[in-house]
Image 1 (cartoon, rainbow, N blue to C red):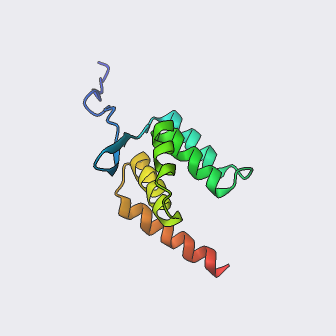
Image 2 (cartoon, helix red, strand yellow; image 1 turned 60 degrees about the vertical axis):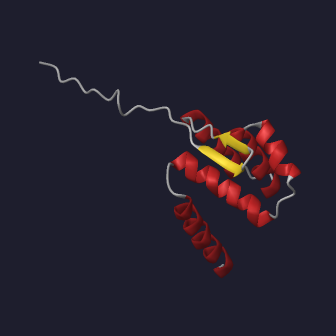
Length: 112
C-alpha cells in the first residue's frame, strides 16, 4: 500500500507584518519567488547599497511602504534595522539572530 504524507496543516501561508509605528504596518511578501528576487537584488553589484535598500523594501513591503519609510528621513542605522527585520521575516527567525549575523559580518569586513 502506498504511504500518504499529509502535510496540509504544515503548509501555511502566513505573512509576517512589520510595524513601523502605531499607524503604519506592512505585510512582508515572504513567498519563495519574492525571496529569490530579493536575494538577487542584494547580490546585484550594479546597484549601490542605497539603491539595494530601496529595492528590497519595495519588493518586500510595497511601494507605499517605501514612500512612507523614505518620508521619515531615517538614519542609515534605522534603515538597516528595517532591512534586518525584512530579512528576519523572510527567513522566519528572530530579529536578534539577523542582527548578530550582521555584527559578525561587519567585524569580518573590518579585519580585511
